[in-house]
Image (cartoon, rainbow, N blue to C red):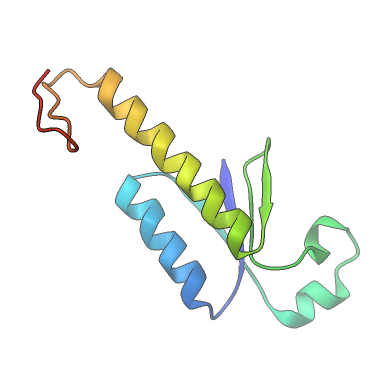
Length: 97
């Protein structure tokens, strides 16, 4: 499962969560306080916030998360194009399947 590790207050993370909702992608939100991150004993919890971890890939920082989200959007779009029982209209060209 995709996990978004974030500080409590972050407009960037709020935007990422909105993108997950728009794509209808399930994820887990993990909110870290500054004190929790500083006192964490394990290395994973001390990573710089925000970051996304999906079990295969780790994206830390805004640029890496933005790249991750762009790839995820492309993957979701491809899955939706080829797994739907309904006719598909290409949003770029308007062509119908």
